[in-house]
Length: 362
Image: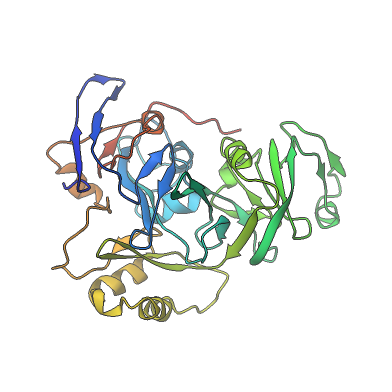
């Protein structure tokens, strides 16, 4: 298994709950985490993150595992179509799709939300580096769709009071018109009000809804994610909401595509959209037609390399199937908690992860 060029990784295997590893970093490349969940990027490096596998512990569901790795329900289900989301089975190997192609928005600054993938990106500068942080989200249900367009944050609220919209009062006559802060408040602990009617980016008291279309148009984050986003985003920040079911990115000379189901656009031609994007980016002649067709057909919701076979892979940690993963000579295991502690830019190989943290599901 290849690592990013310029890195030498030393693994010390000490099985005390989790396997601990240390890494010696000798250079920094775009697409790698430069601190916990913050990724650098550039024009030739628009694919970020890592992809690995995780072995189910006990009676865990994919919903619990998704939250453990800060993924939405849609992401983990699309990446693991053969597994039952509620009863995947003890010791089952789960693909963890923590890699993404950046949305096609220029300039990249402020908040960008891509509706089909149900994910929020926050672009900012850290020193001279252009960096991004990303979070899974829940969005508007059918008929109550989260609108697209360009907006801005006009108010930041801690412990928001929920003034129940008239539309919801009509649906639920028993619902109080005002819900104070607390465990019964669906807005959670923090909220960002947009210049878009009653639309908020907020937390939730129902974390299982992240990665689903269940809101009345608002954007909801996990309870543990909303304070992080709130602390980073200034009042007045730009917010761009787009609908991009097909994304194309590059890592060095390798070309990747990421395809998401988009139920909103009935009859949408994913292949035509992929060809259009590849043509616009001047990459159509740099891809394998067979790989492109397969990626579009499967719609796995994670970056898939579509460069021709002779194209040298640039080292991005791309998908390996669970069957291939089990054949690796030296599996590397790490818990989500341990991964969050890493403060250096190091590739997390396609490997089996072992975690001990059970997420709260309030």
